[in-house]
Length: 76
Image 1: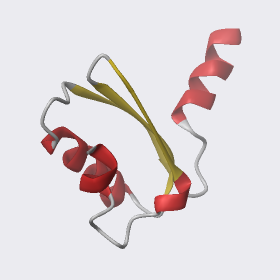
Image 2 (image 1 turned 90 degrees about the vertical axis):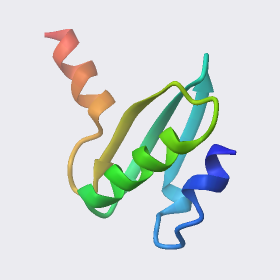
Image 3 (image 1 turned 90 degrees about the horizontal axis):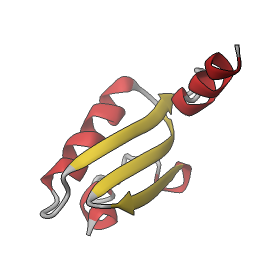
Image 4 (image 1 turned 45 degrees about the vertical axis):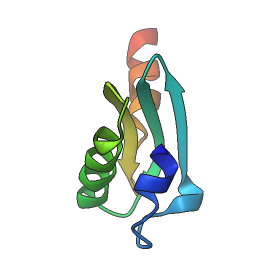
C-alpha cells in the first residue's frame, strides 16, 4: 500500500528509493532530486492507513545520505 501511494506521482524517482516497514514505521532510503520530493514522499507515506511513523533517510542528489553521516559521526 505504501508504494502504491508514493508512486502515484510519476515524477518521483521510483528506482532510487528503498522502503522497509517494521512495527508500522516505514523507513525510506534513497536519493531524490530536491527537498520538495522528500516532503512529498514523507507526506504520502503518512497518509497510508496503518502507518504510525516515517524514518526519513532520503537525501538530495549531491548530498550525503543521513545514515552515512550518522555512521561517520558515531565512529569519532
